[in-house]
Image (cartoon, rainbow, N blue to C red; front, side):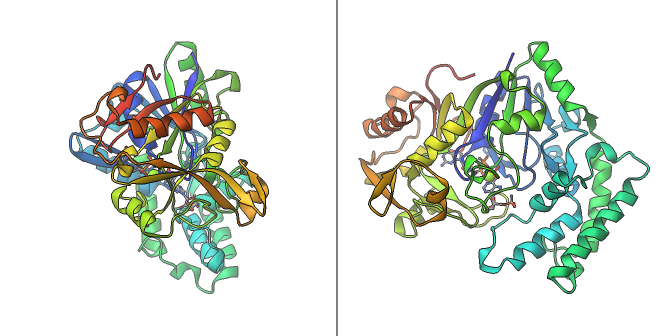
Amino acid sequence: MKVDVLVGMQWGDEGKGKIVDFLTPHYDVIARFQGGPNAGHTLEFDGCKHVLHTIPSGIFHPATTNVIGNGVIIDPVVFRREIEALKKRDLHPEENLLISKRAHLILPSHLLLDAVLERSKGDAKIGSTLKGIGPAYTDKISRNGIRVGDISNASFMNRYDENKRHHIQIASIYCDHPLNTLLHEKSFDEYEKQWIEALEVLKMYRFIDSEYYINQCLKSGKRILAEGAQGTLLDVDFGSYPYVTSSNTITAGVCSGLGVAPKSIGKVFGVFKAYCTRVGSGPFPTELPDKTGEYLRDHGHEYGSTTGRPRRCGWLDLPALKYAIMLNGISHLLMMKADVLNELPEIKLCTSYKTGDELSDQLTFEALEQKITPTYKSFKGWRTSLDGLIQYDQLPNALKTYVGYIEEECGVRIALISTGPDRNKTIVRGLLP
Ligand code: GDP
Ligand code: IMO
Ligand code: MG
């Protein structure tokens, strides 16, 4: 067997959570491989809406095992909140959730550092979710991190204190009284107290050597889907650096974030919106700071699932989509939120970038550094509701033309079209998993 992968193709929030939940009945295991509580994955079904941050989006299917892989970073406070919300829905995550011992912990002092460092950047701020992501991954890479498997170690609290002291020292360079910084509306002491209490909840879960578990599952013929967080254009290597997150969000991240060999990667599903959004700072060539952008934000309810911040909105960017297809080895494209475009008389699609007199369809280093002007192809809108449509053939011709053009340009089939947030509002073309 191989590990199938699902990744975001844009700047995150493409609708990954909805699709993982939709595909879960076809899989035995759903595994997150990177990111942490900066993610907000929304699932909707039976009239209920649920947002997950650390826990994989297969958790609502009790027969499926969910794994938080070694590449993920965990804040016990957020984890506990997620568990409590699941329990309110009569779920028993202790029965189908496993956590890698090698996953790193986000400490309260990582949140403190995130806040202080971001503030020190002034206008050049990243627009981080301030969940401690950058500082926690920094400690991982500089070999100072503390892992889930360390929690049961007698020296755990000593190491915690040492790291905290070190973080506060760094924060003091940027700010006179770092401990006065509020962490998500709480004082440092309050957050730390909650964090230590939340460790007890984390400890109730099974800590595993997830690389052995996943490879054993592969050997025994189990079907695995790796769930990505964020999106390709937020990847630390290939995104619009420095306005990125601190992990590899692309398919390659599955190998290091779960311990899967490259030859064991199977299908790769690339999730993209029929338009683009971005939350936080950084380049966004097709951004629409006008009435159409507002229309997309209002009709698409484009407000962050983690922070509630308004998302910046714009037209679909084909050069960026092609870049993401190349980096991830996408086998199937999945198009989300087609319904948001329902009422627009005209839909535009960026086909290339213009710099001076030169046209290019590559998202090069320079393209991300300097001012580029997108060139657009215009499409007629379909101006009708997609409600109740369940097959591709039933879709309006104008939408099929839009889909056909993207497929032709990208050389990859659009295998699924999502027409609403609910699990049921999903049109599949042929076989997916
Ligand atoms: P994720 O981070 O990729 O899982 O995406 P988010 O959950 O942050 O954001 C996607 C938002 O779009 C959520 O509010 C979803 O409920 C919603 N959504 C997903 N698919 C569709 C769709 O096809 N149409 C509409 N209108 N909303 C959708
Ligand atoms: P999901 O999984 C959208 C963005 C932040 C910021 C940058 C760095 O829901 O798609 P960080 O908190 O990682 O230091 O923030 O990345 N960002 C996301 N944007 N969706 C996400 O996750 C994101 N996770 C981080 O807004 O611009
Ligand atoms: Mg999200």
